[in-house]
Structure formats: structure tokens, C-alpha cells
Length: 247
Image (tube, rainbow, N blue to C red):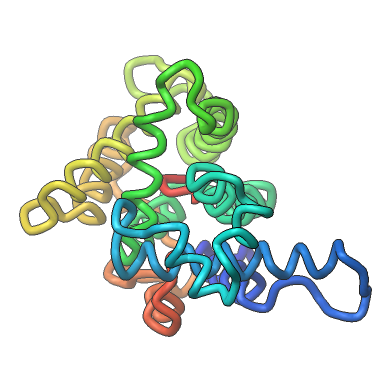
């Protein structure tokens, strides 16, 4: 049975909390454990305070390190936040590799993102800043968007075949789907009282399905209803957002 996005998110969060297994000894294992602790602290504080109000000093204190110790692993705040997004994206990539990406799974991802405004805000701010030529996150986002477009093209092909409404190929439609998801995130961050991001995304999928001649709602993963917010329990349990944001 295909794993749902919610279960992948839960496994990711548990793995990040535990860090690498002990027993190997040496500086490499210790360094990996400290980096995991730093990223977990960063996610917790971003969830509590937001992107701008989360300082490196506060992250270091939460992780049980000095600020100098944190800077040894992540020399800048931008590099630390890129590390947080990369950790999340590794699990999103695992979902895509397992064949889990369908439009219903994307709807679950949007549901889950609605429970973690801090990490969505971080993604949105960093991705906007990265358009400048020398920004440290530029290469990360260039690479990430290419991977996301490939994954979404696969999801669209699995759902609709090789031709979408208007004669578009899945590869042509994938950037449009990215624009819808990221655009809804931005509107939701700015006006959450009036923009219901999960509902709006499901409306878009319904529209897409009707244009393709499908009468049914977007397929959900087994055991997942349209009102459930995947991963919400894990977020509430440790107040930490889990990336791709956005997919």
C-alpha cells in the first residue's frame, strides 16, 4: 500500500528529533547529532516566533550550544534555514520516489502546510530573496524547483495521462501547478482569515479534473478524508514544523 504524505512527515519528524544513532563514536556522529539538534531548535522557534524574530542566539540557546558553536556548523542564518528546508525536502523526495505523488497527496501536503505557517513563511521569504544573483539560497532553489517540476509532472501524468486540458503536456503544466501552490501560500500568509489555502487548492484540483472530463473529486490516499490535516498531531506535539513547503 502506498504510504500517505502524513506518515512520511511523521517518520521524518521522529528521525530529526532522534538524530543519528549513537554507537559509531567519533566527531562525525557527534557533529551530525548537533546539526540535527540545531535544525530542530530552529524549526521549533520559527513555529513559535516566525522567521524574522528567530535569531541565531535564540536557536543556539534552544539547542544547548553557544552561538559560536552553532556558527561552527552553520556560519549564517540563511545557511541554517537552507539546511532546515533541505532536511524536509529529503522526505518529500522519498515520497515522490515511492510513487506517492498524486493530486490527492498534493492536497494532503497543502493541508499539512496550513499547520506550519512558520516554515511556510521561511520558505516564502528565502525563495523571494534568492532571486538576487549572489544570494546563498539561489542554487538551492534553482535545484529544488527543477526537482519539484519533475515530481509534479509525474503526478499529473499519473492522474491525467500524457495530455491535459488545452493539449498541455504534464511537463508544461507542472510550472503552472507550482505557481498555484506558491501563490496560494503567499495569499494565505498575508490574509489567513480570508484565504482558506487547503480549500482553495482542492477547488483548483476539482476545476482541473472537470476540465479533463473527470467527474470525481481528486483521489485521496487510503484512510485520508478531505477535512483531515495530515501531520497536525506531530506539529502540536512538539511545536515544530517539518519542505518542501510547497512540495
